[in-house]
Length: 79
Length: 229
Image 1 (tube, helix red, strand yellow):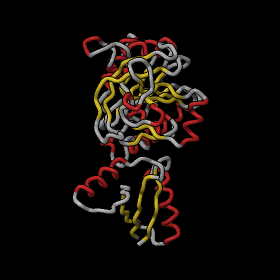
Image 2 (cartoon, chains in turn cyan, purple):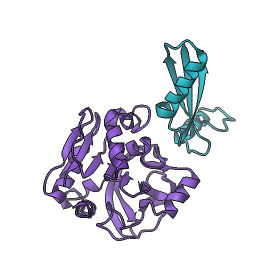
Image 3 (tube, rainbow over the protein chains, first blue to last red):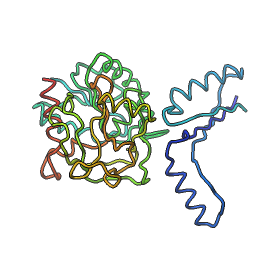
C-alpha cells in the first residue's frame, strides 16, 4: 500500500523559504500570488494492506519522526 | 569528574568542545561514538555542534531518534547534566528534552560571526561562571538557529526563568538588529524545567583562547566544571 504524507508549517510559523519563493514568482511577473508556504511531501510504501491499520501506523510515524508537531502539521493520504 | 561527548556521523565540533572541557577539567572527556552500546560513567553529557546525519528531514531529527539518545534521555531524567551546543541544541529540542524548535534563520543565510549574548541568570550549573545581565561575546555558526515556540510556551519559560541567554547589542540591549536569526524574543539558549539540561546555538567552546578572537566562553566551562566538582 502506498501512502503520501504532506508536512506543512503550522499557521503562525514564519516560512522564509516560502516568502523567498513568492518574491521570486513576483519578479518573474506572476501577479496576484498572495502567499507561498513551502512544505515536504513523503511517499511511503507499506507492506500493510489494511487501510485502517496503515493509517494508525502512519500517524505514529508522523508524530514520532516525520513531522515535528511543535512547528509542523501533517496530512496522510492512502493511495 | 567524567564528561562524555557524543559523536554522531556529521558532528564536527566535538574536538572544539573537548578542548574547552580539557582546559577546564584538567583531563579530556570521553568521545562516545553514537553506535557504542555503553555510554559509561558520566557526570556531564555534551552533544556537540555539526550536522548530525546531514540534518536530513530536519536539523537534529535523525540524531534525536538514534539509540544513544534513549540513554541520554534516561540519564537526563535522573538529573545528569546535558549540554547541547548548536546542532546539539537542535537534537535536544527534537528529542523533546527542551521546549521549542529551531527553524531556518529568518535571513535564510548561514551565519558565522561573533555575537553578543546577555546572560539571563547566573543561577544554574551552566551559567555559574557569569553574573545575571552580563554581556559576553561568542561566535555563532549556523543555518537553523531561529528559536521558535508558541506564545504560551515562551511565556512559561520566561516566567520560570528558563531562558539562559539572549542575543543582544554590545550594551546588552535587545534590538532586532542584534538578533542574528529571527529567534523568538531573542532567545539564544534555554534550560529544561530543572535547569539540568541546556541548549544554546552560540559556541562558547570557540571563545576560550585570545588567538581565536576572545575568551568570553572560558567562564562558561570553568563555572560548569567547578559547579559539578
